Each structure stands twice: as C-alpha cells, then as structure tokens.
Image (cartoon, helix red, strand yellow):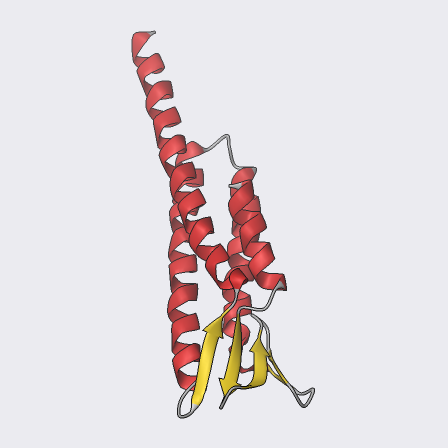
Length: 141
C-alpha cells in the first residue's frame, strides 16, 4: 500500500499531459491546474487533484488500520474505485479541453494511478489471504 501511496503522490506533483496546437505546445496539465505558455493557470481540472489527494490520505490511513483487516481491505477497494474514477474524470477533461485542432499527449505521471490500482489490488488479495489464515487458526483452537 505504501508503494501505491507514493505513486499517487508522484502523480500529484508531476505533469500528466501536454496540449499541442499545430505542433506548438499550448499548455501543460497538472492535477491542480493547466499551466499555459502565457503563464496563466486554469484551475478547471482541480477535481483530479481532489480525487488523488483523497486517495493518498485514505491510503496512508489504511496502512495504519492493520488491526482491522476487513476495514483495511474495504479501504483498498475504495481507493481502487477512486483511482478508476480519476481516470474517468481525466479522460473527460482531456476530451473536453483537447477538442478541435488541439491534441493532447499523455505524460509519464498519468500512468502512475494505474500502477497504484495494481498495488492496491495486490494489497487487497494479501489482506484477504491473511484474514483466511487467521480464521483458519481460530477454528483449530
């Protein structure tokens, strides 16, 4: 889960896409804003930031809820759903803002939430296998 949180924070800090019009760079999209070449910042994409920030905070919280494995597994599932929702919102913003002759190119950091989803899924499977071991040990007593 720690790797998933680090990937989410990495995506928060780095650019996730670049807008081009006729081969010329028009702006860079971050999770909080779009930074244009004129130096202006457009905060219309801040829902991406909110979703990733919420996912990161819940990921850190889920690391410390190891005493309640079922709740920890549910937090993993919720984080996976949040990150899938991030991709949906990211796709909508990319299509809406990149219309006409403007093209949108993905950056490296836009793939980090996908790997975070994979890490949360692996954590979920490990938590449930641990829970099954604990329940089997309780039956043997």
